[in-house]
Image 1 (tube, rainbow, N blue to C red):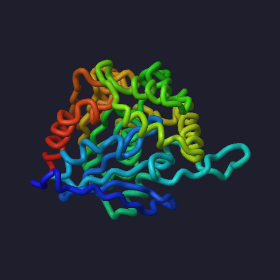
Image 2: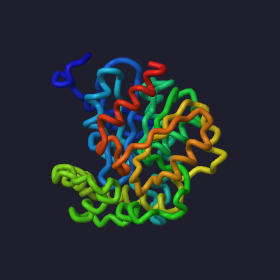
Image 3: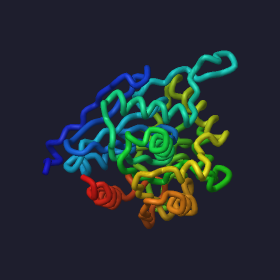
Image 4: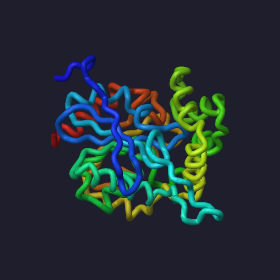
Length: 285
């Protein structure tokens, strides 16, 4: 087993469908792709830095930043003044992530998607099924449950680009017992404290309000891959009824509910989460 202290996490960039896409990479073995969520200040490092040392001894871990997030390119959004700009909707994220996997020469990967990253996995699993062998949907978006954004999600949709606003965002995404470090708050705040990041987040949130994160139930039911649905018991954004609906719709699915946990199982319950997904993917590894 790889010594965690000696493990290096590489930062790399690749062209994915014309978008300069940053990703982290560590470890060897079956390919495991980790895709972060869509909250203000989200990126691959913030989501997965604590998980990668636990997963890399078993897998070749690849964690990209989605378009508009982290160190990946942030094209100018489409507006009335700029109709040729980039549309930050869910179909666009699906295409970008499929382009990323193609550019990396990957197929039949193990895929983990948190929230918006889960919705992205759903689109790829249905439209490009050869790219994903097994998938974990963790606190996943993709179904209109609840039918309107929850108060916890509204902290993100109304983010005001202040440190206090970022604390509210994190509070809405985590369970009541989670206390974020000032380092985490500052890291996420800094990631969106730039004009291009603010413009991208504004466009992403505008599309989220339109409901473009959601799929029809019969679309989700087309997923043919084995899926593990992971959800925090206290997740106020992706609530338990949504997890149960995924289990109802996806024929080949298992459920794993994490107690005392909100929307961030990978951060709030890192070892528990990594143990569960390693066992799930180990069925095929």
